[in-house]
Length: 538
Image (cartoon, rainbow, N blue to C red):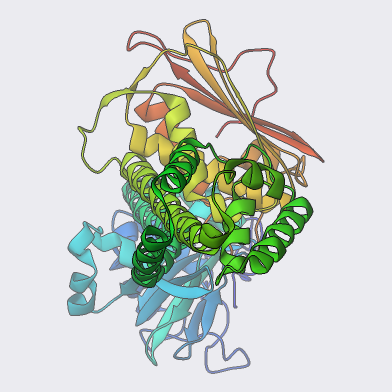
C-alpha cells in the first residue's frame, strides 16, 4: 500500500517536500505513482484533498496550519473492488482513513469467514451499520487499536465497491497526529472505546454460541451410548418376553413342586446379585464357553444365551451346578431354557436401569452448566461446575487422565455459575488442546484465606515466555490465524475480575501450565494475586 514517505512528522519534510511550499502533498497523481489519486481533482496536495480531509469528523476541528501539515503527510490510494487493505495477523503499520467508497472487515473463525462490520461513506449504507450504536465517525477510519497496542491487525479489511479511496498514515505519523492535532483524539477515543466494547459483545455472543455448540456436541456424543442401549433393549425386549413366556410354560409342565422351588430360589438369588467388581474378558469368555457346552450336552435349546448370561454376572459352571441340585434330569433342559430367558430379561432390564440415570445425569449436568432455570446470582459449589464442564467436554478429553484434588467441605460461593462455567470450559478446552489428546489434566480447589483457589493444570506444550505476559489481552492469541479469536482468555479475565472481584493468573513451562483463579468467599472480600505467585495480567 502507499504510505507517507517520512518517518519524522515533525521534521522539515514529512511528506516528501516542504509543507510550506507549493506542493505539500508530493507529486502529481497522474504521474508515476498510480497508487495515488486526487479525490478533488486538483492533486493530492491541492484543495480537493484538503477539502476531503476537512470534511471528516475526525479532522473537522483542525486549524488551517494543522490541516496543511496533515495534507503534507497524506498519500491517498485507490483500491480495486475486493482489494485487501490489511490482513488479519499482519503487524499493524498504518492508520487508515476512508475518503470514499467502503470497506468490509472480516475475520476467519474456525474456518469460516465472518463479517464483523462495514465502513461506508454513503449515508444510507452507513445508517444500516449503525443499529448497534456505531458512531458515525467510526465509518471513516480504522487500524488505530493495533497501533496503540503495538500489535497485529485483528481482522482483514478489503475494499467494497469500485471507487474506494483511503489514506494510510504510518505509525510515527499517526502518533505525531495525536500530538500535533489535539482535536483528533477527541473523536478517536470515543470510537476506540465503542470498538473495544463492541468487540467484547461480539466475542461474548460468539463464546456463548461456541459454548452451546460444544455443549450440544458433547451432549450428543455422551447421549449416544445410553440412547443406543435403550433402543437396543427396547428392540430385544419383545422377543425376549416371548421366549420367557414359552420357557415358563415348558418349565411349568416339566417340573414338580420341589423343582420349581429350586429354580425360584436361584432366580431370587440372581436378582440380589451385585454386578462383578472387576471383569476379566478372557476368564469371562472361558466361563461362557464352559457353561454353554455343558448346557448343550444337557439338552438346552439356547445354551449360548445361558452361557452369556451366567458369565456376564461373573459366575462359573460350578456355581450354577451347585444351585441346580434337586432338579431331575428330565426337567433340566426346560429349567436351563427358562433360566436363560430369565437372565436375558434381567440383562435387558439392567441396561435400561443404567441408561435411564445416565441420561438424567447428562440432562442435569447440561441444565446446571447452562444455568437455564435459576436466578442470575446464586449460591453454588465450584466443584459442581468443574464436574459439569468435564461432562460437557468428555469427548475432547478422551485419552487424557483427569486428576481431581478438591478439598473436603469447601464453602459455597455467591456469584454467576453459568459465567464461571464459561471460564472453566475455556481453561479446560485450552488445556486439552495443548496436550493434543494425551497427558494429565489436574483440577484443584482449595480454600486459602478469604478466597477459593481453583487451579487448572496440564502437561501440554506450555505457553512461550514472550507470550505469557499478554495472554489476557484482547485479540492476542498464539494460535494460527483463523483458529482462535484471541478473546477467550480476555473474557475469562473479565468474568473473574469484574463480575466476581477475583483474579486469574498463569505460570507455564514446557510440560506444565497452571491457570490459577482466585474467587472471594464473601461479597466484602476481594482476591488479588499473591505476591509470591508469578503472574500475568492484562
